[in-house]
Amino acid sequence: MAGFVLSQISKSFGTTNVLTDISLQAADGEFVVLLGPSGCGKSTLLRIIAGLEAQTSGSVSIGERVVDSLPPRDRDIAMVFQQYALYPHLTVRDNLAFGLKMRKESPMVIEERIAEAAELLEIHELLDRKPKELSGGQRQRVAMGRAIVRKPKLFLFDEPLSNLDARLRASMRVELKKLHQRLGVTMVYVTHDQVEAMTLGQTIVIMDQGIIQQIGTPDQIYHHSINPFVAAFIGNPPMNLLSGSVRLEGQKLEFHAGDFSLTLDTPSPLTTSLQSDQATLGIRPEDITFNFPGDPHFSMSSTIDMIENLGGDHIVYLLAQGQHLTARASPTLGRQAGDSITAHVPLAKVHLFINQVRIPLELFRS
Image (cartoon, rainbow, N blue to C red; front, side, top):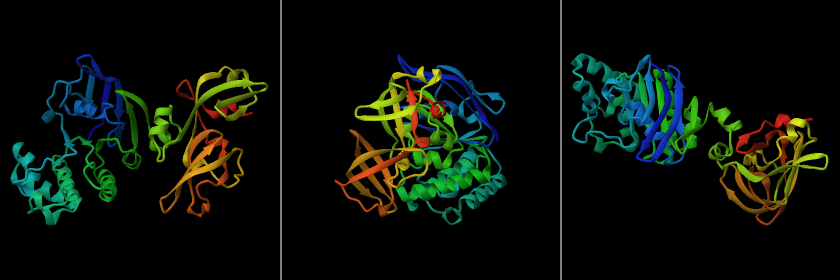
């Protein structure tokens, strides 16, 4: 097993910059998720780690070895792609064995590794079938098995669950998590699905336009988003973001967005310096409550625009002080579209960004 280090990786195609100054490292056995919208550069970065793409500048190390000059076969990595890439004319057993035979492993070693992978992935009964006889989930297990038998230092996954339906993706996420726990090997996983990222990753790397926006644990990314892009990208429904300004109003420092206003605190020299016309207030839908909270909070007179019934909870769309907000509520809310309702938000749950940078709300506490 081995970790990896990326040092100032950049990639350009002609005059188009795809990756800019990417530096990232993972410890031995860590599960790293590269998360971002389509076109953010995450798959290109994975291909650079694999050696399938050459970086314009920067360096890649796997374990203690710089691998920039090594072809993919010599980097001791294994990849699992969105497309299963199984040989249709070969049985599952032969698909698992193919790479080992190309490496001229002995028949005994090949059989041992196939048996080990089959037990790990619970595909014993599939070994004599061909890919056309398998379901999508079974094919993906075989694709992972083909990587496992290699016993690589590093596993690379490029959106491997994208072709599966929602139910199968959920079960495969569980299997991948178990697989990582059993193998204890370093894994890098590319996805645009935040649920996959939050449930699988020990470390999440949020990317946008070829730049790393934030690196952190799922809790850090979710509760301490570094900027509005990350805040909006993580969470379903996404965080409510109100664009406005922070201004000194009389003896109070306030946030304003149209008709919406919120007193932040009696100003101090430090907080007064944070006045800006480029401010964003963030509120997660689950942090809006319709019951009177005991903690310090602010309230908004609101009108319900629409309610989505998801069974276990309701998504409530509000018009509050001229702002459109989304809240997550209990099915026992007992309200309908058009009703007036008071929404409450604990002050400790509010997120504030000034000039695209997160500002700790502790600065505003008296």
